[in-house]
Structure formats: C-alpha cells, structure tokens
Image (cartoon, rainbow, N blue to C red; front, side, top):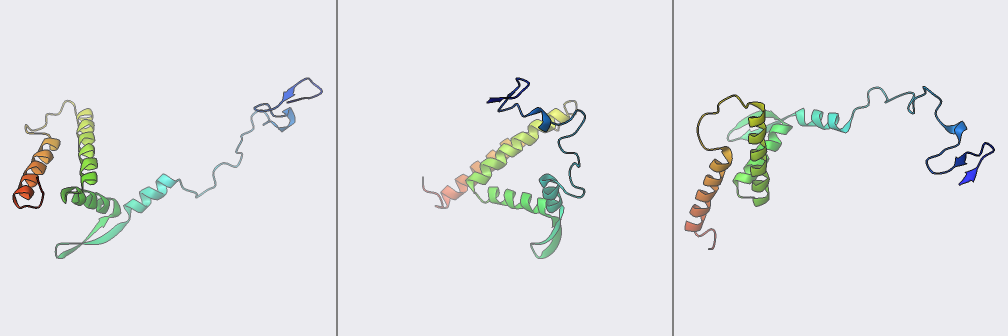
Length: 136
C-alpha cells in the first residue's frame, strides 16, 4: 500500500479517488446492448421450436421440450435406472408443488403417482424374473 499526499492509503478495495465513479454515475452507463438476450431466453426459445416426430405410423409436430419429456419418460419406462430414479424424484416434486398450489382442492381418492409407478415397476421386475431376463 502506498500513501498519497492527503494521507489516503491506496490499495486493495481502495482505488485512487480520481479513478472512482463520480456521484450519480453508473458503472455501466450504456447498459446492456439492445437486442442481446440472456442464455435462459435463448434456451426457452430453442425448447419452444417445433420438430416433426414419428409416433407409430403417424407423423406429429411437437415442441422440443415435449420431445425431451417423451424421451425421458420412455427411458425410465424401458428400465434405465438413472432415468427412472430421476423420473420418480420429479414425480414427487410435482406432487408436492401441486399440493402447495391447490391445498383446498380435493384430489380424487387413490394412490399417489409414485405408488402407482412403484407397483408397475414391481410387476415388471417379477415378469422379467419369471421370463429369465433377470437372474435372482
């Protein structure tokens, strides 16, 4: 650190007084460039684009976000354990958020989505064991 004539110490976090922002002056006077967009905006636009997929014997146009969701769900249903675990966590999160959004609304009686998925997985596992696809 060095001392100036006015006995002001200049160093880390203490710039010389003549280089500081003047009172009322912004650190970014021109602001963000017009037309520039944030990464989240670009991602949202990209996920909103439409793509053509083949479902069965039919061609269908859906958004990229819908395509990602379908692929994710299909991977979980086909037995990809990482995708399945992530899918179950998302289902739990969706149920918690739904309850927070609609606390007064009565949902029809029945098991929550997680229990339904777990029961289907148990049945699928039993069927695969019976067919010899999984060793005990």
